[in-house]
Length: 105
Length: 271
Image 1: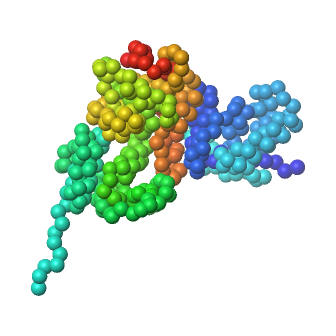
Image 2: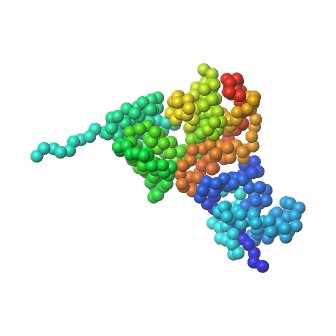
């Protein structure tokens, strides 16, 4: 089975406010507020860590959830975020110019 | 052979809103009169201007095309377009040109847009909110149409200086923010005072059965502020700047929800 890689889109603006991650698409000015799982996914989306590793090391550590179920949910979430151009997904590692997690400024 | 051309006198005035003087040049004396009347109290010295617009006053066209506002940037030149005006502005040269009929509304829209573009790069903004000064401090009252901006402005007691009942002007300065008076009016149809003061608080308006102030979470504050900002540009970099400006603002300025009944006692809670 191929692995999935996720990377933050450098063209969106992101800030954490009192633990709440807010993201604005520069393309269409849409504002997103990420829940805890989506925030972990966003912060871990460095383009080189496979999604299953993110799920195993970050999401399953944070929430009491079965790895297979968590991976399925994470893939669904990743595709949804990608549909809004917030992250990129690929079956190959995604080179990032600025892979630092967290706020984009 | 007789001279067939004549030198046309160029007339000009300076409209100074938010400490940013904009010189407007025209050859139409009627249009100049319109501007002098529209921006009374916001006219600056003719010697100093940060931006200069030449206005080509065109004959009326009916009906006015309903195409909405488009603000785009290409190669350092902004294009501002709506059914009733066409404008260009180049920040590097600080000059621009506006084509419109002799009316005060089109140039008003151009000025609002240009101010939002300038402020967005400086951490400031224009917002759909009333604002006022009391005891040397400025307060913003934000909300969508019908939330009570004009009502709160109308209820202000005599010791309150009204900055606007519709569009507030906020400039970032050092660690804080300054609110300025604007000539941009709402239903009150009364120009704000051309003064400024350090901004002390932003209130998100809600009408209810009692007067009360409730704290709100930073995330909700940022979302509400963003929903009330004037923003026109189709420009990724500027969208990002505006987002960061809003987040920065709610991190530095207290933001609360002000629920009020429409009578003057609400002002007992302000200042």
